[in-house]
Image (cartoon, rainbow, N blue to C red):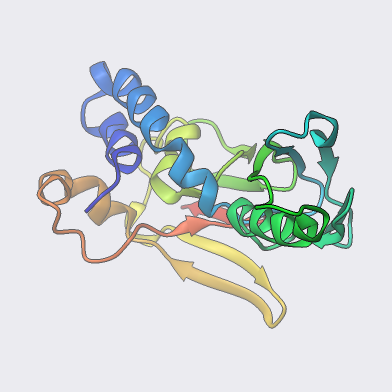
Length: 204
């Protein structure tokens, strides 16, 4: 099943007159789920709230080594983890300070400065972008205003730097943008590729 945010991004190209409204509504309904899947990067700012403990509510910046410190919890590794896992670890670490059940912990991304990606080539607004949550290739393309005239969507790729070197990942933008009816019927074979920090979406 294609998520509402994905279908809204597709609508930006299939129905320009109503795409903005659809994208906004879908983004609002899907934002919590998407953010929970976002992998935190060095440089991101996180809001941490311990329920019933206002003195422990604070914003922290993830350091270049991918960690941050929090009262009673010590040093927490955050890079490449999602906010749900980080919150669970903080709650577990502070649990020894409570005789009864420890309070719930909520972690959200305030500023995703570390999630920066690039869109180049034949798009209407090429450049660098940041996002506070995980973003798939159609959502990224919508941020760049969609494909420009004569864009070769069949040969679009994502360039990704890994520890083993640069990886070139082909993406089926032409098929996705022309397959709106099939996607609405829930027949998309696998989830849309999600960009990572540092990725470059190239539309030749």
